[in-house]
Image (cartoon, rainbow over all chains, first blue to last red; front, side, top):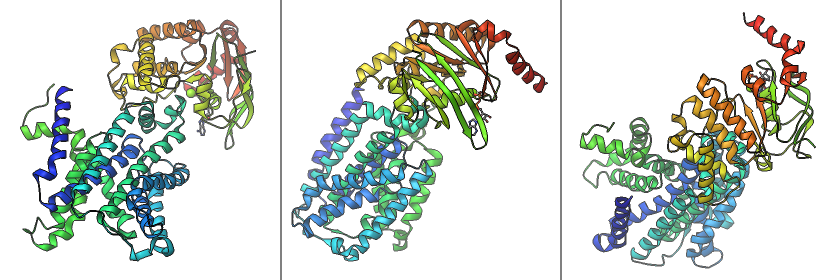
Length: 320
Length: 241
Ligand SMILES: Nc1ncnc2c1ncn2[C@@H]1O[C@H](COP(=O)(O)OP(=O)(O)OP(=O)(O)O)[C@@H](O)[C@H]1O
Ligand SMILES: [Mg+2]
């Protein structure tokens, strides 16, 4: 317990000082993106990992958050930073509807329904041009030139998200979420309103994914429907972050986010320019292989199987 | 006023009448046995009481009010706890977490819920397995975990569905003792059991069904001597051999 706290404090200090240690804007950018994925991955993990409702459509909430922030600027002429709060609320509003429709279904049917939902909303965002400017996308002016403000904002968001989920999972709601995942009928018989608590989990999850989306709008200053509602770049990536890091662990998605952003960038940049360019086309393939590897050898992800990984790396035997 | 009353309960599965106009009353404080050969509709009756299955016809009255159509979690909050014949442990949670989750039915803070869970685990002799994952328990303990979870919801009445099936003789004695102590703590019990030694020695009254229909009701002795009951069970014996 003690050593865990010390690790957390060291990590905290490291992240607070990071931009002063690493001055390269390129690496700062990567860490900002990774921290954003910490938020999305944790939000996915709350719903899928802890509550057992596997979403293939987290882009819905991310995208709605991003568009809320963007539309604040283009239509209401107020700061996109308001989106950090209201983007989360807008995502919750959509989540109410998603939950109402999709929670009638269980297991893989729920997953497919969320997948269909994200395709529908992408089409809506593409075609509702008077609101979203369609395929043209939304371009805003960045608030800051330096990376520092963005870094600390997303660091705060990631820390708040992890801490909130940590507290949540030690409360009645957390126990209810996991009970629902383990056995829905048993949960009902224990007095748990499974429909209500699945929706609560979805709403909290949507809020964090939505504020991550709003952050993306502010930071990247450009969005279009293909990016923020993307199955490949957002929904699947959220799942990968979760399972590579370790589902149903607090720190899993945080670790998964850094690993996945690292892998993605290594391939996108063709091993930082060392490898031939065509390698960068292969990153989807590598993602797929990575998932197969994780499922076969570390089903609980990096954090969930940490003991096992340590044993393999150190070459020690399992303690009996 | 009876605590629980079934009024001409009917449950259809397509063409099959799994339960056909079954009526009985369970008085507060008693142990009421429900018996019948395999497939006679006992579990279906439980599932109709807490509404896992919607009732086709008839009514279920609890504490003087109809609970027909109420969601299972509402029925639990009203004071009916249940166990499952095919146990449903929350597998990847510890024993303590299983029972804590159900104690949240009456308590809101983790401290209170955990305290209640600890008390119930002690009562059910599961204390030593507290930190084990539910999936790692042997069947005897799993059955007791079912009971513990139901008790932690602080029910007025508990439905026990074959909680003694598959137990060895010493576990069986322990189970009988546990059921008696549950009743002493003021909880009314509706129990389904195939083990005649258990059900006959423990029940105040017994209701017997076959093919979803009532065939007898009365004291254990009356029911055991009833020709229709003997035939239902003997018939089953003959069919088996
Ligand atoms: N969900 C269901 N759908 C269709 N038929 C069902 C369903 N559940 C039970 N049945 C049928 O209803 C009848 C009664 O089943 P039930 O499980 O209530 O019997 P039981 O008395 O509990 O038997 P056992 O002693 O073997 O547990 C059986 O014929 C069974 O096949
Ligand atoms: Mg049965």
